[in-house]
Length: 523
Image (tube, rainbow, N blue to C red; front, top):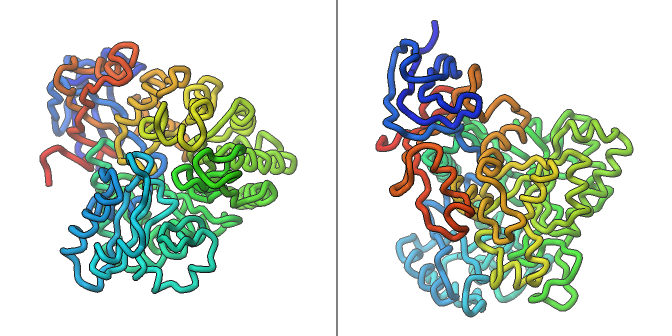
């Protein structure tokens, strides 16, 4: 017996194959018909679109769902603009917690502060009333912690990245992070995951790529999230980032052995591995590389042996060069075409040059990128310039150049590093601080929809087409913008200006394989 069919009519469909289509029929989870209202077939149910825009639903190609859910329901420090404001927010939040609770916060970014001085461990002790405090930086590659939390992990003082001030990076951060997040019960984690996925659905996101692995999330957290996939929520495609861990990734239900398999750290914490020293760090400091070219090679060969997609987190140009050297070594064993067919990934790929981009083209690497990084940290006077200098900062996040030479792009947020905000990401790619790197609206939109599906080898998804999965979102056009496709055109800086504050579309409904996973106004 087939499921009831649903006709959506009276809309404006983003359907290049039939630009005049105003209606679509959903039957058994697929698009069974597309066309004009007047030609629509009968259906068991009818949904009036009232002129709304209908597009393929978004895919967020890099998220951390548990951290996202905890951030949405916990202490958000993204608006803090000084050490004093961080302390004030910690004190106010801690006052409502039990005396033995751990204060978990996220999102501070000293690169946005007039005075980048940070609160000390002792100051956090006082603000939290002696409670243990863990506050992850926006990049999640470092954290501020209290003396009370450090006391629980005495061995951390001998771990690389430890600093008595309470600002922990590298391995020291991973050690203390594991203890801090260990205070969150399994039921709290599941609740946080549901919050994150429901929020994603409310933004027109029908699928996410979860990036887990040692130092990021534990196995139970990872498999628990995968169990929620598609159960009235967005689908979850998991990547497990453990070196030589293809067998483990498959065992856990991941689609790939990559994601947050760290080749380096982050620019925010000055741990991204760059070829020239940071301008605002320790003299001569170029960050840290966490893998060798030989390890990259062996990991890719391990992935090939298990029929798995692989990948690495690589931000700095030195780290990316190491990863590409490993790809070259794997290609000598497997052949370039077999490497290309796997569609291995590199997450972030922020500091690039023409030689590195050519490597992505040669080996068919999918670039999982976050346009919001440029929106937040690119341009004159922002974090990239502080860390690298203005000339090098202009070369960051070169998504336009990469798209132009055929690199496959899959856009995401790295939430909670930046918020889930797919339309905002499209606008950020279109309004890149470097005009040379700006993408067309259609190309940026495709990278955030079909690009995410292609990154997990689902090539027939992410389009409104006859026979395709019925996975789409319905949008209200914002005030002051013509209904329908002009919404996309309104994001174009050539039309509106790169800094124009045009409101973005609002999601009314998200449909995943025919099932409504979000509807505006429903609880």
